[in-house]
Image (tube, rainbow, N blue to C red; front, side, top):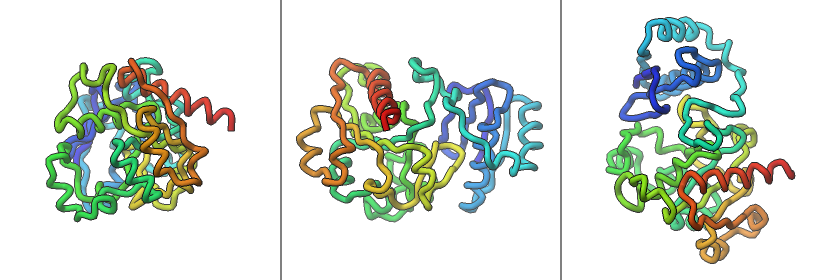
Length: 273
């Protein structure tokens, strides 16, 4: 694996390279340094060495120096908003109070029947080596990734983009993510609650991921269902989760507007509790 630190458009993990963005380029923030350390540690745990490179010598020298003192960053708290990715124009970054897992309708039904979010290995009952070789693994993720449930930040549109990608069998165009796109069902979690899961881990790229499974009754905060799926979803909704479901309309909204609408709704609900 390799970390490439530079003035990229956004942070991305692709084909064995973590393209790391700095929110205040060329300065490396404490949270960003923690991510780099977490990434290297995760890779080492899984038997992979990690090379670090940067587009400026001063950045590389700083990171190499700070890597010698990882305890300094052990208790760094995530900021309220992470500005490495500014794709979400409404807020100008990733809001860190909530994380979510987004699933297409058919997967959401299976999740609710099971009562848990499952890793790909557990959900599809296939070996990690088989999953890694599938065409859908376009990013060439390593085998260990398929043993985890993945989460994105709560206002991120990446989950719905992936739903559309799986539906189309290719990357969706901008027009296809405009009004009329097919959204997924969003399972929302409070970050601080999920962080207490005994199998939670920080890999330096995703906000958080959890090995094997996450039981919904124990951790999910809210399930947001596109209104047109209400009847199908409520038929399989466990009784213990009924009061954690909300159905919202995405009529005439593009993926950015939908993401903001859903996040804002769930965020406001957390203030009431």
